[in-house]
Amino acid sequence: MKQRFIGSNAAQRAALQKNLLWFIDAYPKDGSTPLATVYLALIAVDQGDVARARAFVDEARTGPSGTARDLSELVEGKILLRRGDSVQAFERLLPIVGKLIDPYARLLLDESIVAAAIGAHRWYEAVAYMDLWLRDGQEDEAEVVRRGVRRNLEAVPADALETMLKAMQGENGRTGYGTEIRRAVVARLASVALADQDTDLARRLVDSTDDQSLGEAAEGLEELASSGGAPTVDGRTIGLLVSTGKSQLGVRAAQVLTGVVDALRSGGGAPDHVRLATRDERDTKRTDLALLSLASHGAAIIIAGFDPAQADVAARFAARTHLPVLLLSPLSDGAPPPPPAFLLGASREAVAQALAEHLKTKGARSIAAIGGHLTEAASRGLSLLPEGSCDAAAEQAGESRFPLTAWQKGRIDALLLLGDATCTSEAIIDTAAGKLGRVRAAVGLDAAEIASEPSPLPLSVASAGRFPLTSGNAGSPLFGFKERHGQAPSWFATIGHDAAVLARAAMRTLPTDSAEHPAEVASRHQRAQASLRGVEVELWSTTARGFSGGFTIERDLQVTEVR
Image (cartoon, rainbow, N blue to C red; front, side):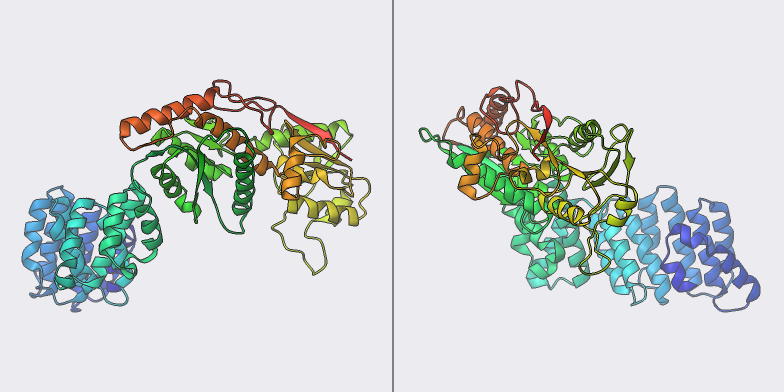
């Protein structure tokens, strides 16, 4: 019970009350009975029952001197803490520091004196007693103590922690502090630096602390430290957030990059000094860091938001920094983004609705969706068969990952394909090979580029502006893209192209020199925003020529039959 009591929070300790009372009744003369009585007093303090706590303390004091009697002073200190008198609590607890021999008793005292020091704003003493707490924690309690120290460090101001860290690192670390408390302080400061995007603190930590002490935060801190700090404007620089890796986000980023570079290289005309800067977010948790890095390295407009989650982060960044960001996906809640975030992406729900309505006109009644869902309104009048997933594994080698048998029993007559091109093509091929009868495939924007190739199923695709490229529109500018790159542009290559065209046209209104003074940087961000709102150019993903003074592009979604 001692071990359970030490390793528990207030609620868990309260649950031990019945066991402690049983122990006292069963073994009234046992040497541990006074200690059990003190534990009951501590539970009473946590529950706010000071009178009951004092009754237990008085009972414990009648026993022989020792740990239980010393711990009665701990109870008095806890009562003062409960009343909000942290200074008196700290003074009351100080005399028994070092007196307690029982390791369980020492841990209780360590926990309490740390709380008292924090409440009294005696930050340096608090950290010193956290060091003692960590040293006193035996193997069984070590992780519980570490969690307690991490939790208490959150209450200590970062500047006090940084001062303590300098002291710990002084004279080559020979200051008496343990390795664990140094690592805990570093971890807390790293967390503060990353949460507050504090580049100066990140640099100080990276410069003064080795990677082993930085632990898991090392990479993020190094990225933040190198981000450059405050936003600047480096002439006419467009920033592009990219994501490496084999995930869907990485695939989209590669497509967007292709579209952006294609637009900037094929602009023609006199040199306009527009440059492209990219930053790899590496980890979706570091999206904000990558955006900050683009801003600090001179981007006056940023292209980002390859999926709704990333768009959420980028929109908040734009609102906080007042730097215009072009979003290639809607926000996760479907709401309009806050200025100066500009929405260029299309609503997946709107695409799904348009495709569903089109399928109804073709007589479809039994539909299976892959890569997305239909709203209740869009599915009205339709029988929804089991959804397919490209993330699912086939039951046996050589079989389809899609529920073809269930689709056949449900007399499927239409596929609603809202995923990427790879997933969509696989679903079409497997459905055609499954001989399920006449099935029409309706394809969303994310895979509509497959319209440029032959299909084994009758095919309808969502279309927007000049996208997608089909066999019948060889005169489209998208055909030039296919000639240059060997394949038709995907949806994300298309809106990446449009984002670059819009950003480039807006950039031409900015000076070509650099700016670092905050007022001038803010002025250029404002000019870039105003230019984006008013610029007019030829776009591929919409018949609109720009944002028409707003922040969301107008887009008329259509459905085109290509087979």
